[in-house]
Length: 388
Image (cartoon, rainbow, N blue to C red; front, side, top):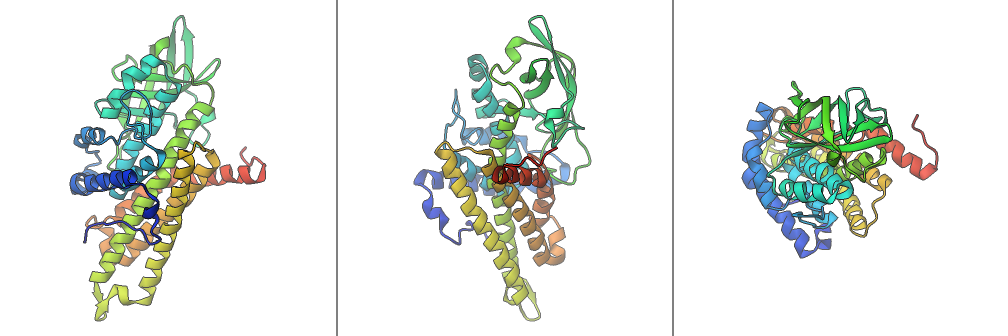
């Protein structure tokens, strides 16, 4: 396979600044040099390459768009480009960075106290500490408002009881942003590893997102001081705002996975000979490649405009939902098409589309399912709420 040089049929990269292109190229090189040689091993083992976490921190890729002590404070379009290049490598790699930044650093920067920001943000940005986000529960995925985890006041402390499931970075996290229902409403807490009653265990048997740490958090009479609570986080709107930040990165990341699938299928079709000529010379194969390229190009234009809007301070939930919904479904279809072009070779780990295809089944579901995002956009354009 030849090296990846990007997919840019409509010359959209011309709209990027020198700084944006520079960051993109740094991340692209990191993925090629440091991550891709390891991904097959970790996908088989069901592990995340933790040795790369300090490298991610040194490159400024953790919480890239977050402003605060020790944080890069870069633009939203740059953060999107980072996610795109990382997910070209694997959804698990982008998921780690997305959770660390959008779901841990962002709520601390947005809803935390000055003490919490000073303590945690520099450590998380450098990769010296790892975080996870505890919202989803076994019985509450698309309806997080029904969460059963409780936080009860006890003097100047809080006692947390409950559990969280499908949590990225769960077993390796030093701190968890945990959401619980208190008498005054939903609140966020920073729960440190080693706190009595707090434990994490892995989810086993995954065939998707295997190069990612996914687990369960258990809170058994966890006693926390008031200083552990995110003081500005009140109500369900707080955790949902965090998810909106993460979904933005997913919308970019999915285009990276799709681009890798397209590049792999195009390269293979030029090299693979059947009936005396390359696969690329057959009409049906060309039709599939053109369909992939068309959808990738449309998705690229969508996220670039979304990034520019966020850079201008426009951060509307339905806009992010439309991009996440469209781009992940597009990427999954590209992965399936690429697997088809590769034939039997497409079901082996020698080629990436099968791995992307498995990963994207999870990405289609997490951070809001395809159907949930459909209803978010539908409610925005019609003014009618179709949720229960």
